[in-house]
Structure formats: structure tokens, C-alpha cells
Image 1 (cartoon, rainbow, N blue to C red):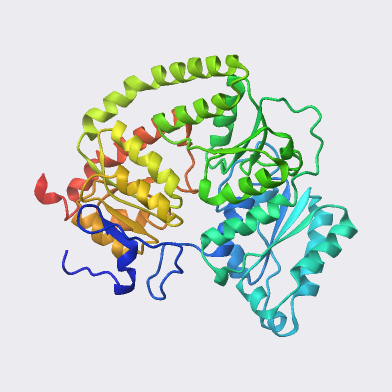
Image 2: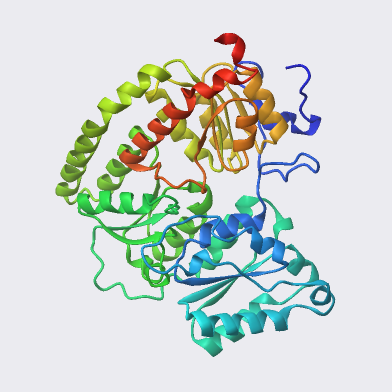
Length: 451
């Protein structure tokens, strides 16, 4: 579409396989005026920490930042629901002039007395960094008075990108680790890192591991608990699902507690099975674990595969576009779409690294567009040019797809059904089939001539 142009400054963050040398850049602050899909530092920190269900989460900043948090992560809990509430110090013009430390102290003490949390996280937003509130000292004072961990999260939004928020969250979470007893933890035990239990996935994955004969010490952070994080240093392996958000924590635990880690993905048949096999292989001294794993994978796949073949009949040859938060998820989605007979014509992420994009280049077909930190105009341009039948993204991408008459699958944190695990692959296929084959697209201007 010659009428849709991309900003000159964005040229090196977009690559089309086979059309140009691979020389992508990433980790770049979003361009002003680009209306980037990438989120801020505060967003990155709260999506990691908010699923800890028995902790208090207090946003130190204007009320607008808190409006961006209430239940937005959608993480399910099997017990406490405190994480679903959004608390803010509601800084105003007067607080900007005279400082907000007193207000923060009063808010923390009142909320801790009222809700009796196991810990409290205090998120610094942009304005706090500008006015210079000493959030750390206030947290230390309240922690001493109340007898619980009160942890500052240095997540001022202007400091960088969403990935910097992940690091800030991991730094805060690391302060909880090493505080609990580890005497009764199995020698065949793991922590699940980077699984946020959006649609109940953490329960599915935990069940798989337990059927294999492996103890799950903690999930960080889906359906998470402060006490579980406190004893997580007793696990023998960290299994990292969302590598962009949790690798920093895994590296810190490896350095201090000598816990190795592996990177996995729980999306799609291949990667789900490989995640279980890789975990079982780590405990090779117990052959029963690998035996149980093979039986589990065989049972799960045999139960779902006939239905997948039916969906593939209708989806063969359809074209998909992917734009998600982490590149590791994009890897799995490309493989999952291949199982459905679909090709990927556009793929991008908010937080991918140069190595991630090189892997995507190798995985994708000729002509596929790879994009880092896209904006709506760019996404629209390539959806039209590539004539996509499906767009996989999050809440910000849904309107783009529907306005262009393209089927949409929500693979972000607003969804209500699990898309991870073997059952998640079946849910994913069902949703993709329903949206791609919907007769409503016959009525859209872009499609009506082809029917």
C-alpha cells in the first residue's frame, strides 16, 4: 500500500525476510509521535508483580496510573483476592510541590492495618522520580513498624521500556527470596517463573509437573504467595516461561543460590511437550520422572489431536499476523499455527532482543515481516499488504483487526480461557477457527469482492 508510510526513524526496526539484509535494532525508546504499542516501565513491573495474591500493591503517583492497574492483569487466584484491588496515593499538584512521602506513609500504614497483607509493594511512577520522594526510606520505616516486607519498586515510567520494568519487578521480588524454610522440599523440585495464571494456566502446568513426580515449590508470579517465594531458594531448578520478564530473576537466583534454569514455552504442542521433557531430563537420576512424562504427553496429545485435524481442514493456507509482548511466545505461536496449516506473514514483539529476532528470521518464510515495537499504522499497513486472515495480539491490537475486517485472537492478559498446555492448544485452535471462518468477514469492504 503505497499510501501508508512508516516513519524514517523506524526503518531499522522493521525487516522483511528475503528483501533486505538482517540488521534490526531493538531496546530502543519508542519514538515520540509514533503512538507505540510498547508499554512503560511501570507497566512492566506491575504485570510481573500484581499476580502475587496475598500482597498489597500500592501505586505511588497520580490516580491515572492506578486506573491502569485495577484487575488489568486478570490473574486468577485460588485464595486471596487482594491483588485485584488497586490502591493509589493519588498525588495532586500540592503533593508535587511539597512532596508525597507523608501521604505514602499514611497510605501504607492504613492499608496494611486494614488488609493484613503478607507483604507490600510500592510502585514509583514518573512524577515520583521527578519530585524526588525517598520511597525506599518510607518503605523501610513501615516495614520495621509493621513487621512485614515493604518493598519499593523503582518503576518510574520515563526511565526506559517495559523490559526495564521487568527488571525492577525482579529486583523487588528477589528481596523476598531466601526468607522461608526449605527442610521438606523434594530433591525433585522446581520453581515456575514467568507464568501469570491469566486463564488458569499455572494450575494446568502445575498439574503436569506433579503428574511427572516433580514438586512445584512456587509459581512466580501467577496465583503467587509471598511465603512460597520466600522458600523458592530451596528448589533444584528454575523453569522460565516468559524469558523476557523473568530471566533477570533466574540469573540472580543462579548466582546467589546456585539454582540452574532452563527456558521453556507452554504454548503449542511441540513446545509444551519439549518443556516437560527438558524438565524431566534435568532429574535424570530418577528415570521414573521421564517415564511419567512420556506417558503424560502421549495421553494428552492422543486426546486432542483428532479435533486439531478437523480444524486444520478449514484453516489450511490461511495467513496470520502475530504481535505479542515477548518474542518467546511468538516462537511458539508460529509453530502452533503450522499445526493448523497456517502461515505467518507478520510477526513482532514489544520486548524482543536481537537474538530473538534472528531466531524469528530463521523460523519465518520468505516475505514475512518482522517488526520491533510496532505502532498501529505499521500494523495496519502490513495486515493489508499481506492480506492476513488472522491477527493474534492483545487489547490494543483488537480494534485494528476488527476495523480492517480481520479475525482476531486475544493472546494477552485480558483473555479468560487458558491458551497454555495441551488443553490450551485445543482452546487456541478452537478460537482461531471460530474467528477466521466467521461469515461476518464476507460483509467487510476488504473481503466482499472475493466471495
